[in-house]
View 1 (tube, rainbow over the protein chains, first blue to last red):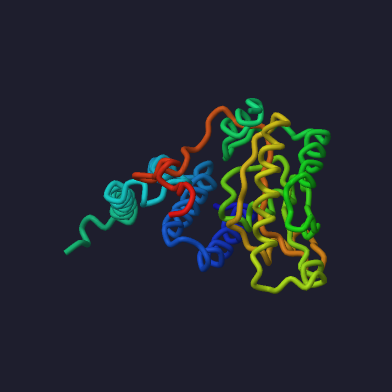
View 2: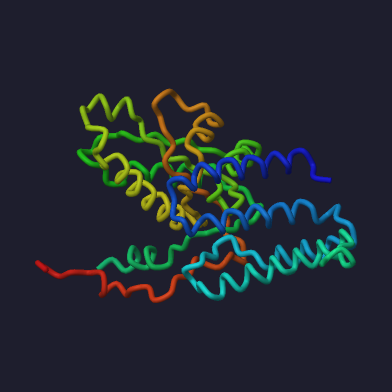
Length: 102
Length: 176
């Protein structure tokens, strides 16, 4: 699904972000991870199934490559929780977990 | 007071999104030429610059630079020539070479602004990977990348912080 060039780009980003994070402000860590998620969503969207498309668009809409927690700590956490909830709801639907939960 | 200089300083912005329009060779050379006018300690030339315009090379640089949000149409990589630093007997802990990376960067950013380009500095990148990609000589270490291009109409929002100080709050006049 992911073209090799895009996969390589993402792999390089993640590996080098791990290295740069050793020396940088802690607040950059969530931002780097979200940037990777946003780029993965952007790369995947052209070939995504009808079901996955809305989640990918929501992820891309919800990510700012310059947003850090210090700008609005409570809002930042709430925003990430909302994204996590969206991902989880998609998982429940796409993996047909509706009947499997306790 | 030189209003034109003050105006240039006040209107320069970090640009994080560019158009697909290429950067002209004359513009790039004008920006590079300004680097020598940056203040450098002892007027020692301890820095080297790698100018990049090749699209595959720019793409590779971006892959190993987590801080590079933009897709630049050109880049200038500011490097420290450590063999030269050692030749002057400058101790490893001396911050001078890094301070001069900063002055070079500030000068390049203003030069780009003056040349009608947008520019943004990037320090979050793998030094090892960039040196390998650019085939830099042994001992020449990349320390900062200046991304260049023509600013896109829409820019990502700037990093916001709560309760940042005004300039008056961070200045001490005379002795404290």
